[in-house]
Image (tube, rainbow, N blue to C red):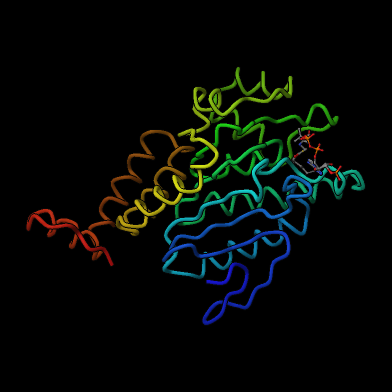
Length: 271
Ligand code: CO8
């Protein structure tokens, strides 16, 4: 499929700051494509990401989304500092709200979203990676929230998601020093699931995506809802939700097929 142009039931779409391609059936890859600025995020890039999410939401065959950055040096080196340098306080707030809304939309997309961090994930880049369901990193990846060096705070959810992911004390250390973490440290602190040599990251991402795409998509979507919605509920209510969605999963064809396949000693073929 063409990397930026969609036909058929999807609206024709041309992007200039991102690439969206369906690498294999149901496996999509979104690449932030501004390598001259190390893939910094400006308002136009965010708008295109929003449009890409719309395409994925409208495609019932979508199974997994991989997000990465163009080039070998950077995932996303933050919000675009040149763009931000011209903003008034009101415009700065609007820019933060735009990023917040889009990252949240990504986070709550019905399919799993995996960040392939192939270099710098700083500021808005770290915030983007943390909005994904999980992160695979290349050995050269660097994570951090260096906003204090620019005299600003995080604005795309970094202070909140980092605290939830690595705990308050470590989040505070990273936020107030602005220091960067290596991929290995980020994995040790629970931010990153796996670290691979740079040359293997894309293939490892595809292997993982293919594994996810081969499972029951209805079960995966319900599971994502459980984790996403459950993490901010108290345990009693979260467990009620789990019983409800467990019951709901029994209404699916995939449940019929998955259990029949097990009992007939064959591999399940999910619809
Ligand atoms: N924005 C705009 N341009 C950038 C950015 C950025 N975040 N990062 C790099 N670039 C540009 C550089 O200006 C340079 O451009 P040019 O070639 O025209 O001079 C090009 O990318 C290459 O960068 P360097 O020459 O600096 O490359 P180095 O290898 O020497 O350094 C670094 C790489 C360490 C990543 C360095 O570029 C750097 O420190 N970048 C800034 C990182 C940063 O501070 N990120 C956080 C930004 S703040 C943020 O993300 C807040 C998010 C919330 C916003 C809320 C809305 C209000």
